[in-house]
Amino acid sequence: MLNWWTTGTQQGEVGTFVFDGKSKVTCDLTIEVAGGTATTVTGIGTYSVNSDGSGSLSLALSNSSTMDFDFVMNSATGTSVAKGIQLLEVDNPSKTTVATGNAVYE
Image 1 (cartoon, rainbow, N blue to C red):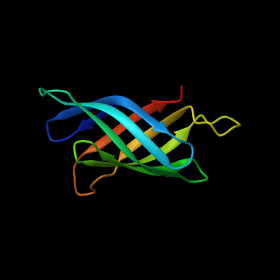
Image 2 (cartoon, rainbow, N blue to C red; image 1 turned 30 degrees about the vertical axis):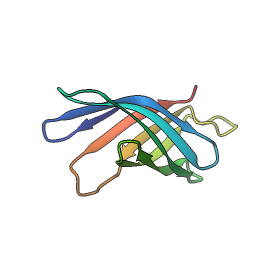
Image 3 (cartoon, helix red, strand yellow; image 1 turned 120 degrees about the vertical axis):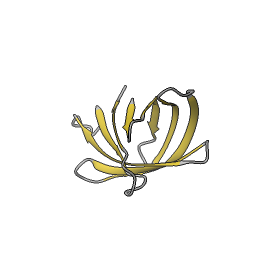
């Protein structure tokens, strides 16, 4: 679940991100702005992971928008499988929007 806090408006997202282990990512998300109607979108994109477990991903969504995130994996096992990911949206540095969330490996 991702949550946005902006000037008086909160937005939430829930959904799944699927990473292929190579550099491709897909997602299915439901987005709702406080007091609004929920919208479902899909996305495709790419990601990269640094040796310290940090990385970035970029998505093109079915509603013609894009999302860019920096992330850090945590709770990695000896096989380098992440048990969790912390996400920070970095779409537009001039926005006053911050997004954080968690993803859990299943």
